[in-house]
Amino acid sequence: MRVDDLKPAPGSTRARRRVGRGTGGHGGKTAGRGTKGQKARNTVPRGFEGGQMPLKQRVPKLKGFNNPFRIEYQGINLDVIDASGLDDITPESLHAHGLTHKGALIKVLGRGEITRKVRVQAHGFSRSAEQAITAAGGTVSVLPLPYVSGRPPAKGNQFTNR
Image (cartoon, rainbow, N blue to C red; front, side, top):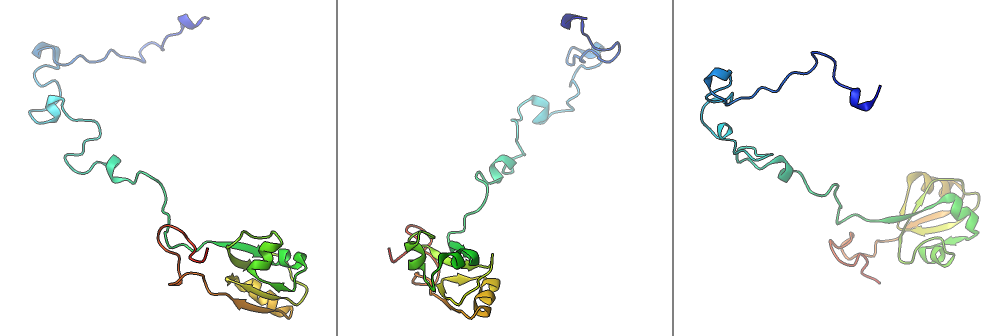
């Protein structure tokens, strides 16, 4: 068998109905389009919804949503703090040891365990991290955010103290 021998099974295809060829051809006069109107005259653009705003223009062009007031923290876990060997943890000391970016807002997260007494200053703490630090005999203090109104500005530079 060759490719040029292939053809559909007998009876599986029918010839397309040719409409608009006069009243003797069973598709004459209006040719199955009804009477009058826009659809009878072959002038409806693709995607036209009768003057209503079309779906392709209603849906947003870009996906997702970026909250301009989102506060972006950099997370530091308990096991990283424990391995650092520092007793007094501040954002500056973490940056000096290469654990965080400069000027980043620090949030302490609860992965791992802390086995010694440490004093931690950060912009945020998870509940489990705070409990683990205080259970090990350490202290926790929350630093204020560096923004004037408590949240970042809507546009432009995120930090006011750079």
